[in-house]
Length: 273
Image (cartoon, rainbow, N blue to C red):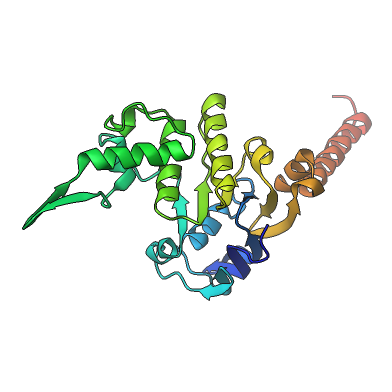
């Protein structure tokens, strides 16, 4: 692992009026690492991914890329610095081909002055090879992307980000709503991206998918960082306990037990009806 993080957040907070969505978040993500950001619903994951991708500006704190402070005014600024985000909706058009979805406005062209036109043969070849480079076997790049499974569409989106120069790859719940086989396919491609030296930020609420591929885990709860751990420092069960607010749950269970005991005591001492 290199000494300089590919991307870093220092003391990042995000406020929406009086609502504190994120509070003093510190994260370092290194090249060749899968850094999992984990949290249950309402933990702040959605806000954090929008900060990382340039959708939201921090209310305070700073973002660094390759050790240099940056300000993302728009997602294009993040993309220009090699920060690519694959959102849950994938940004694909179902009726268009795999190749057209792969390029989406960046297609290779052939010129015959004064005109230029899409170089379909080259586009199909580049798309097929780019996906093969991270282990995706595309039968026919001209088929509609809507005919692919959810896992295959995720894989196309990952290959697209890698091909167009991503050095930091942010994945927003990439295995949600996928079956076991499709989820395993996507996790395989995440490992492929890590082996190519990318810094991968894997945002999820599913510890059972994240733990096998993760190197580092940052646990979010109610907009706060509850700790960052190497895999060797924390077990799967400990991650689950922190994510779910284990101490809060114990307090609730104790309160319920006390309430039930009080009800039972009142029944035992009250006159018979």
